[in-house]
Amino acid sequence: MPTKLKREEVSAERATVAALLAQANDVGDLLGARQFERRLRALDAEMVELGQVQERKASAALFFGGPKVAGSRGIEAEFAGEALERFQDLVSKSFARRELGNLAARGRVPIRSDSKLMVTAVTRGSFGFVLEEVGDQEEALRTQLNEVVGDVVDFVAQVSDPAEEVFLEAVADVDARTLIAIREFFNTLSGAQATLRIVEGDREVALGRDDVQRGKERTEGLEVTETESVRLRGLLLGLLPVHRRFEFVLEGEVEAISGKVAADASRALGDQVLVGQHPVGRRWEAEFDVREVTRPGRPARRFYTLLSLIRELEEPAGPAAE
Image 1 (spheres, rainbow, N blue to C red):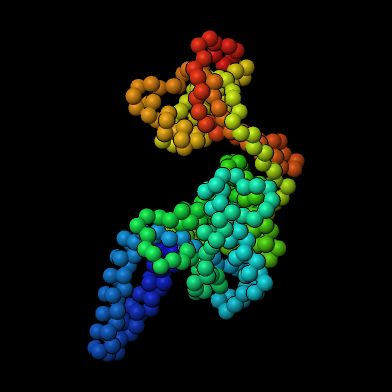
Image 2 (image 1 turned 90 degrees about the vertical axis):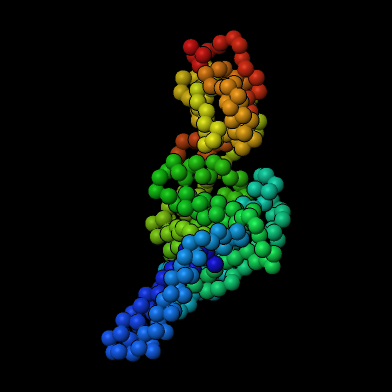
């Protein structure tokens, strides 16, 4: 169960016990007061322990609201099954892409069995489910699935974020199969007029009706086209290896392009900076992955990922070098 959810449950129980202790003191119930005091001390110790917990296995709690949900009493089975299936599909495709790279346009999702979550509890309050990675072995570090579930929660939040730039940055970094999965997830929520609260680790993401509708509308007709290993020439204006960001002016252009630096390239460039071989301010032939995001009725946007600086160019050429 997510740490935040455990803390909420312990905090709620503590408030109840504290109220009972106050009542026992008011009526002079000394035996009851001692019992409630012992329980309060145990709950306080549990809160301290929860503050030191580091979750290693994947877990997330999904709370649903809307006409398909009857408060804390129940949820329509068809909607619940479809929503959980869509979330699991999003996790499975994100996990496979992380492990194997971009997925084929069709066919079975590879290593799907390695990304399965299980329903381990029904949440209290508004109706929902706790999904967890189940295994007998204790993990010393965060599992890959734990990290992927965190990324998926980020992705759901970013797609529905009011800021357009946050949404575009998020979808520019996924493949077509993952886009289909996020589209179907929001379609399911929107079709049921549902709201969603996700608790994962020590945080939560809340999506109201407007957020769900925004996510649905944004993903309809959305297409991402990727061109890999494109060689371009220009001037490297800026580089932040730790934050994995760059700025680069292409030959013949005035405006700079910016984007992410691939993990391998970031490490290599960071090593260059450490030994005093800073590549900024020089002209390079560089290799990029280029993604173009298109939506109906909107201009296309291009996003670049710097893969490597292939070779330094000695002779200036074009406005970029002036």
